[in-house]
Image (cartoon, rainbow, N blue to C red):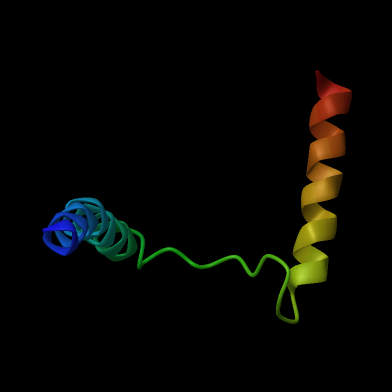
Length: 60
């Protein structure tokens, strides 16, 4: 009985999460992915984000 209850709870929680992630991935598949932390451009992107954040603070 406990096994059936645990499997049911797992399906109720995991199934919607999987569907949500799948749909979100399909909706955003046309967007370019930003390589945070890995890849050849990650350091350059990090530096640009730091500069943009500093500029935003200076303009406020």
